[in-house]
Image (tube, rainbow, N blue to C red; front, side, top):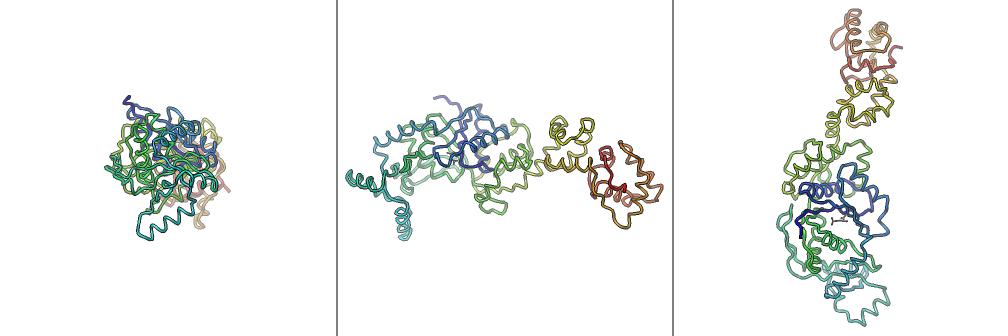
Length: 444
Ligand code: GLU
């Protein structure tokens, strides 16, 4: 066997992917790239009803946007024969059995077990059925589900994040690998894929820990190599509340549309939940070099989407005009003013979407804000404001003239003028703002 590192990100295309999925994708990507290995995008689409092509496209668009480029794509829906062949092997080994309980019956069994203080583990009643009983049930209820017969022994592995994990096989229900309608379930498909594709490292959420236990046994039954597993903690909201319900609003697509920079997302998600500080990094090589899965802890990780804003703002400050020329031109900013526009706005925006508000203000004029006691002062000042276009000296020449004419100085001079011209009490250096101002509504 080659010692090449192979990882995969294996989303089910049943919805838009969110920050929780990103954590998984990123860790798998970074492990592969750091080792000079391979990163597979595996589409887990064995559910023909819930899987949608638009989500497959969405997953690719999101990963592309983040720069998490995959080496190849695999689709489970194209590999069904392999899963059926593996199922046959398990049947031949006596590790696979058909069961006919309805969901209601299973529920009832679970409740009874819980009432008796027992763990709600499937009681393997189906194993006791003889051929005639099975045929009768099949005739009455249709095909049963197929369960993998776990060995009742301890399943142990050294987890990349959780350390030594040990699960008692007897404490887990024999997993259903094929549904009554013949649909292959992820638990089986994933084992076949990971084995055949030579996957060496699997990182996924800690909601998969029990799956890992059963999948290790299936891998062992089929004679496959068991990859190194790591389970990252699940994300919670800023107050520690479960995030699962809100994950829908934390879709990567929505964050992109809100103007969050990919570098901000990668910077946060590559460090959140680890013992290293979150800091803005821009180059993918920095993420790759700085990644170490053993730095991540097992306790739930608090995620606050607000943290993405200062990181985005910080990232935007690092950009040159060439980097933002296209969105600036799209606003209608003339080429001759683009450099000045970016110089003035870059430190005063959270996302690139904020540029529009600035350009609207410069090109259409801001609603002046004038206190009653400043009305006359502003009228006087406007009377001596030269016609545009303005240049870098306009502000100092004009304010010097206004000072002489009115006797005002300091804050009492500058603040009302800024307020009148920009509608804002604070903002960028007015000497730099003046050359961009095309309309002064306060002229009256
Ligand atoms: N399709 C599975 C999921 O999205 C993949 C889990 C795994 O990485 O094995 O949860």
